[in-house]
View 1 (spheres, rainbow, N blue to C red):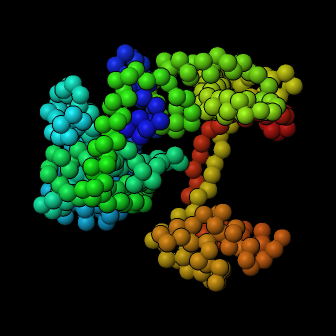
View 2 (tube, rainbow, N blue to C red):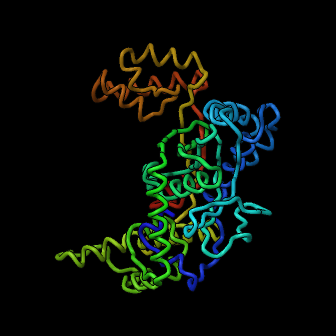
Amino acid sequence: MNLCEKCLFWAREDVVIPQEESSEAANAGTGKHFALELIAGVSNTDNVGDSEFANLWRCEDVDARAIINTVECWLRPWIDSGPVYCELPLAYCTKTDTARELYSKSARDYSDLKPGEIPMTIDLFVQTGEATGLVVDYKTGLQSTLDAVGASSQLNVCALAVARAFGLDEVRIAYAIVADDGHARIEEHVLDSFDLAAIAENVRGIMSRLTANPQPHPGEHCKAKWCPAKRVCPATIGLAKATPEFAPMVMVIDDAETCAKVHAQIALAEEFLVGVKAAVKDYVTENGAVQLDDGSTLELVQKSRETLDIDGNDKAVAALKKALGDAFQRAVHVKVSTSKEAIKAATAQLAKGKERVALERAIVEELQTLNAVKLSTFETVEVVRDRKRKAG
């Protein structure tokens, strides 16, 4: 529904949405949704198996119980406040301003949908009182383009549907933006009966515009709102054709029309570059180093990255406090965690230049002795200038 506020072309009956393979990020997000549903559906998380949860969450079995306990801390107050419905499929009818629960054989199965109805699946609904309820939308991964919770058309329509299906006067809507370690940032907003009536009127307007065969309205939302029709949208295709392949990246923008066109093309260029970089990495991974014109080579290089983990490590926390003094709070977040960047910022309050670098290095080395530094490895494609010197 968020996309409907910007463009309705994708929702037309005559627009055939192409089937696309689910991305790795989308699959990971789906797994986390199922894992959250698993916790919300039991009265005692001791009944949730570590291996089953770890498989869904994509974490190590040994880390599963800690993540489960962390999730329960913020999820339990909600699921203890009334009857719980996980992955609730509903259909809202704009003509009658009513909603009903859909008969569903599997996740996102809308085969029971009737003409004129809007389908949706609600991650979590809790009927908190006789006329009140809570709608929660789980969010995972990077959420850089997320609307404010009160401005989310998706959550607003979900709230309207549960209000009509369950006879509610007030619905609290919430984002649970969940990190890999199970912690969540919660954002909430309350909708009363007047808000719900306004939402119903807005949805009727959207459905009315949909009957008029709306034309594409390209913009940032084409990418930011994950338009499912961008591969068949004439506006998006037209922009792609208007962009010369491998054109120089320097461009003079001297009028508003050119500025608007270039701005609309930025998302296409970014998406194109992501695909090109992935293709280059795949080729080098499968076929080995590639000789470049300047004598250098393009190779798959294994790198490592150190991260700091002091949560539960009292000795490491004490060492940081001793080394940083009053600057300790600058380096450590509310959750007991830190990073090299945070320590760098904290040491800048205590010393400058080489002295600061030496202090930072000494702190990290001490954290290493206290097993508070984790080393992870990854592969990336890089240009290698001098193969002989590297080999030696």
